[in-house]
Amino acid sequence: MLLIATVGLSACGGYERDITLRKIRNTSNGPDEFTIVPGKPLEAPPSLTELPPPTPGAGNRTDQQPQADAVVALGGSAAAVQDRGISSADGALVAAASRGGVDPAIREKLAVEDEEFRRRKSRWLKFKIFRADEYYSAYEDQSVDPRAEQNRWRNAGAPTPTAPPPNK
Image 1 (cartoon, rainbow, N blue to C red):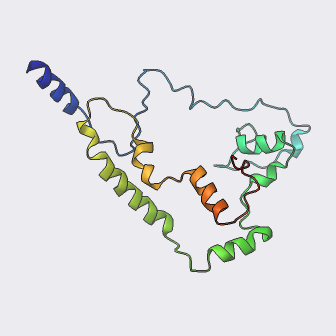
Image 2: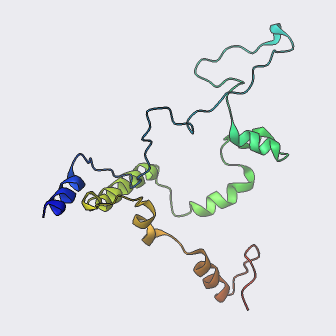
Image 3: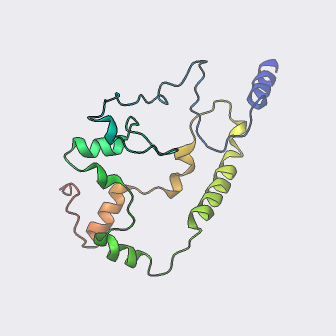
């Protein structure tokens, strides 16, 4: 009886409700090594008279830009990752996707709905003795099985050129 009471009390004590459904925590006293991003090395400009004017609040030349760096490493242009709105090549796609109308507050609505969903899913998590990462199991009903979708489209006669060939 004493063991059951101890386990029951330890499962309830000191636990604030976590609606993130994630149980990954940094338990050390030191910094998290994955949040430290070193800057690029400093470079002397070719001429001190040609320096650009300072822009308070904007990035500087030593800030890391991993997406742009990856594009450049693969032979592309770093300007390709800058947001310039909808390109002319994607205009038809955006028009087709928004043919039923566009809700300007969709992001806020989805954020509220998702928070309520996580709150409902986390209600019973405080009663678990062994806490585990519940994120994927909470969203399991909303996930798509890629193989089942591939087979569904193949059976409907749609071409799937980028998928592996069907098993025979």
